[in-house]
Image 1 (cartoon, helix red, strand yellow):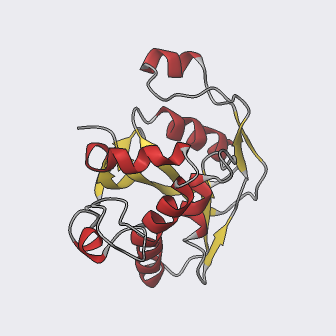
Image 2: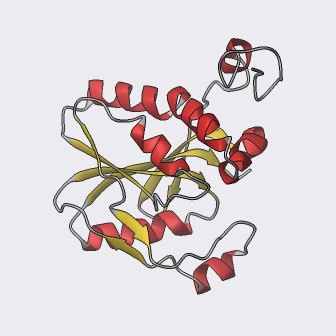
Length: 191
């Protein structure tokens, strides 16, 4: 096999060199309204990697990214926060044979963390990729929540651009009595 990033020989999706140089998470925080969003990478730094979510090979790539980002993040978070934490992925719908957001949340499945798979699903299947802010406003996701109330939650998504999707998710969850601690994403598209 070859490393997806540098194409050198590797038994893993990303070779050790790329994991230790190109793919070291550099977390940043952006506040969207009342929601803090932690992102592990700048979108432009891993754009080609993120675009694999629309392909069958994206399964292996997003699973590898989750091991580098969401898994270590939640392990560290749980060490410092004894509360029972729930993780909700935004719109874990299967496309191309898998859900890239579900891969990110599944990697967070450790003791003290409850993964609420498929509990927040968009009723509007419109895609936002490459669309304007006005288009996103005119075509809301219309999320439906079917999970527990009175829980502490970390939201998970792949990319934050305008923050509209996260704000819509926050609104519906709060209306169902859910306490959102913050959100995490792989990448922030804001430069």
